[in-house]
Length: 250
Image 1 (spheres, rainbow, N blue to C red):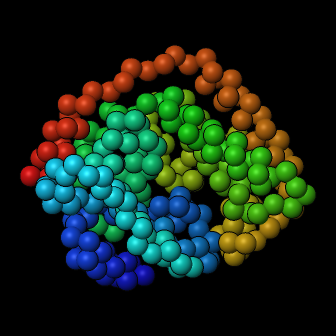
Image 2 (cartoon, rainbow, N blue to C red):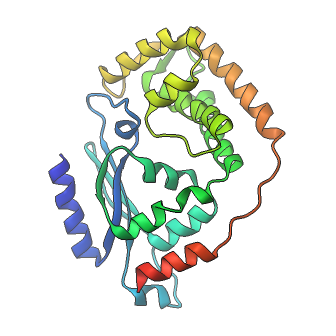
Image 3 (cartoon, one colour):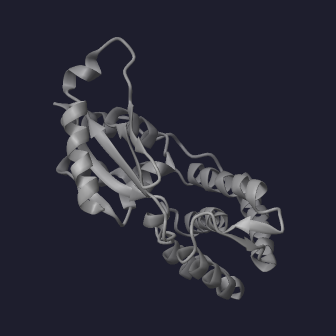
């Protein structure tokens, strides 16, 4: 599959007249709990020729290339990515730290070298907590639940715990978060869920794990209370990102 993905990247570059700066795997494969039939979530950052950025009319800043049962391929324009980085968008930090990299460049390394300076802990906490809350309210209230939804709640909550303790972007791998910040008493249950997730098709459902649900309830309330008391953080400067942007599009 890796070779197939690399071939598709070549096609995208040629047909779209772009250069792909960084391309990674996102989603469950990068998080370390893919199901046997999980698709490939391929994400990339690209740059266009300089004149594209000097136009007065609005231009597209996203390429959505393929979406089917096997491959989900899309990318963000460099300008969009840097604007979102200035806002401390958690997606950029995840793409930068993905353990599965299909392609990268010296240009991306300029961004990677400074990216963590733009991480705002409170923004990251709000993002991960809202993700956990949304999935919990939508998917974990019944007697049976979709297996993968447990991890769509557990991972963002553990990411919050990482941010609160470390003050840095959380790692992608679920097991790294789990081993460091998951309460010991529910690790056996989560290990069981993890084994089931990695050996069950994506649509698999299980009977609700009450101890895990109780842990999720407590963690959501606890983190919610902590975030409410955190001070606002100063906005980051634009100068460094502007210099990087200009150095790449020249």
